Length: 66
Image 1 (spheres, rainbow, N blue to C red):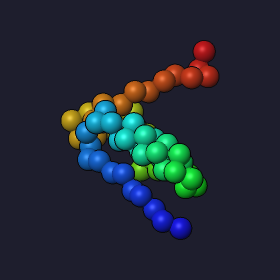
Image 2: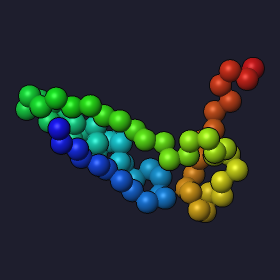
Image 3: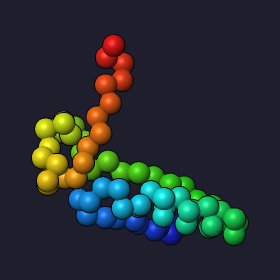
């Protein structure tokens, strides 16, 4: 098993997801089994209290609160 880790700093919207999924699609076309995992570094922390200057822009959706 081999791993490819795509990381980025606190800048959101730099295209890490697009690059990861595109690279995964290319590998899949070559017959390589691909599994994509997104790791959330803010487990058990309220992301709404973060400063956008420290952690980038956050989009909080009020799903299931209506």
